[in-house]
Length: 257
Length: 379
Image (cartoon, rainbow over all chains, first blue to last red; front, side, top):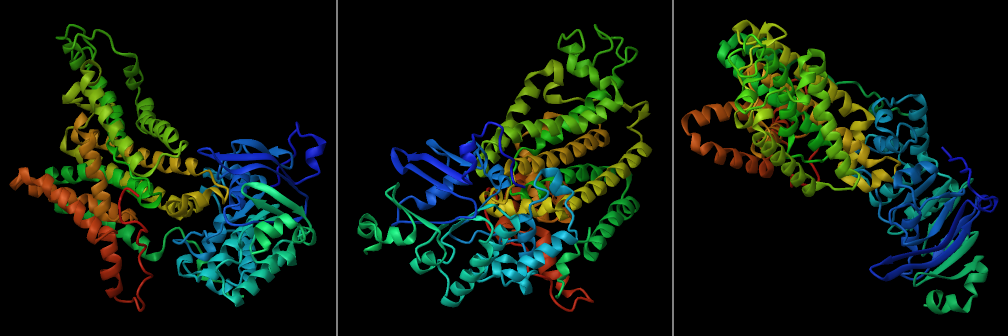
């Protein structure tokens, strides 16, 4: 499912899995994201931190196509994402978990996972899609990982908040994206759920690039290869957690509080 | 590992097979035995509306697109059929008293002297049968693509479909010389030489209609239980999220809308054949809304409910308007409001909640009926 490199891509673009350059979006003159550039390597875990309103979620919205950029470019494996539709971006290999659990309430856990299975995504493909052994095995495997194997028949509506979060992580997992974007994956969870989720995330981030928004500093320190700090729509600082923590600018606007 | 039952995804559950059997027996055996020719023809006419209701179950119930213009597709299908029948009835011999023999009578009355180009394909029966389905489906595709690609939905879409219904009605009435105007296309006689006005033809057409309806139910059932059906439900609930599962929402909506249009078109063509004419009064806003009410009364999530809802409302309409013609529209409106407020899942919901649990051999009550997240029809 990984998109091949476009013929026009320069070798420079290939080095990064994701290259965000001079990205700007303006809502009625208010620049929620202003001239943001950063680069994500293959297999890198990048955490975006910053105070409320810094534009973190907007950056993810821009990458996954939910919001259209005013200017700037987002290149994923050399492919310009700003011109693609949301579904084409997903098909290119970018997966996104939303801040609030975003699952299909009217469907069962099994069906939620099945819909996310990366096959039969056209109208005709969906009409002729069959639940073969491959699909079933994969769903059972994922259900086991996300602690929901006994709930496959349950309507997603009746799951607890934490279980819904896991289901959404499972839906992403079955999609098998190369770039995984997580927006506050442990927010609103109980301590026990948080611990289980952290374990789960550790398991699933192996072998892919991950872009995470998170406020839990312990969690960030635990997983981040590099950290990007956003403030008022701009990149304030970037580097290892150690470096960022000791950056006086960051301490002043964010960590100091 | 415990394998949950959800894995077997049968084409139809035993209860659904039973429902189909009961419906087929009712339409194809009980009603023909119980009713005289006139009443049976009337039921046949009602059943042509059931095609529209069936399409609305997929389009509105499952996909959440409320179309208030299904009469457009019913009418287009009906007009395509009527054009063929009219041309056959307008042979040179039959129309020799006209100033231009060989063209439909209403054209002659309107000083049209040659058959317009878009009438010409309707000399051929195969082309007509293709056009009956293709013309309305293509039209639905164009309207659907224009709206859904721009992410127009909900109430706005409903209003636009109403506007389309109004525009088409005005167009048909205004272009009298080409369409027969407000009278429609009347005086239809034969289908490929076979007189459709006789009693035997009418009963044969009734059975063809019933068979087609059951075929459409099976098609709808296939769509409903395929992954596409579940994507439609997912879209109704969280359209945005479906995009991030990698699906083009617009394409799926266009499909659902086109399927509903194709069903409606088949119904329209069967209407023309059984009733013997087609007129703009089946295209406009009022009939389109009535068709939505059939679906709402039957239950917008139930294919069988849609058929029963259509039969029930039409039976009520016929018996009611015989005695109190001026009150019928009020009654219909009240019925719609009552159903939406009190029984959002219509007859099918009442059946599932109150009748099915009491049936013998059902130890445990069935799963909670799917109540739509939004009560308002325009959501």
